[in-house]
Image (cartoon, rainbow, N blue to C red):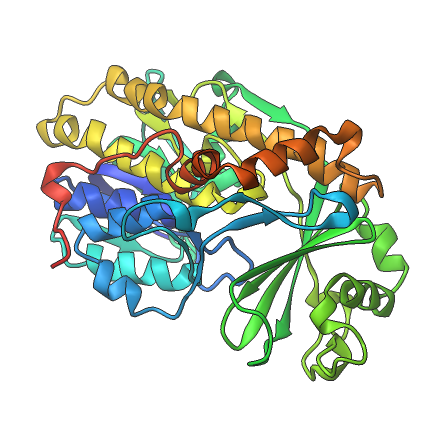
Length: 425
């Protein structure tokens, strides 16, 4: 097989939300950028699909609001957790109470969002998206990352792409995480996640629906004609639960979901495409970690490559997008001028590290005080503290906005480079 040698200014590894947003913003700012995506399309079913107000406002800034709103979607205006006595739900994030147009979370299939970003980026002459292109290693010269080696997953050919800067946006499985100087720090997680589909009926609830079962938690994402179901189970319990049988689990799932209980005519047994075997139930090994350093000469890590998030609060995608916006703002000028250096990539970590660390801290608190007790069959209202906190949050409107704002925008909103802005309307 022949080996091709090419060059670009910025090589973006991974065509997920962070990679596609970064590629679009840099290309609009006049930077030559190539995005390498190892898959042939964006159709991965069991992904996070929450688009928070920070990303909605970004799409508006980029002139894409109308096209995004035309995508099939559901809107969620509040976040509820089962932390009351007897598992009753408390609203701990009333996003609908925030001012402005985008006071909701849009539930949109991620592949639709990525197709939209790719289509828009392909209009820029300095942008290239290469699908079926798997990065296999970094090119190194005198201690600096100078690009990547790749393999075409269809034809089998290999090649090298040299770049002034390589940005790892390839998630928690990123090659960059194997670099010891970046210092991966891991945090314990009490759960894993099962993913599967159930048909949705017109009489079902809408939006995002969550419930607590016997040592598991459920989150059901409304896809219009079907539910994308996430079930949180105790860490390492996958084999044990599967051995107990699929029918037993589906019965427990119905018991935890009142509107699907037997006798209502809407249970899983009445849905002709319910899971028939465990092969249809996919396992996600949940991890939470963070690189101590997100960079080295010639390389920057953002999104899950820099900080793998828990699925709690569903904000991993939006943090990754905000990383990309901050990176584009800090790097577009130096990349265009050919002066990008270690100080520029350090600035991206300095900007984004506090938000990532604070979010993971909140997720760890939720793990310890809510999720782990429920998964172990205990009440999360130990000593009454979480319950009292929830009661305060739900009774004080001014306090309800604090967690809602954090869920919507993180520690602060990131602004794209001025050259990338094409405001809607």
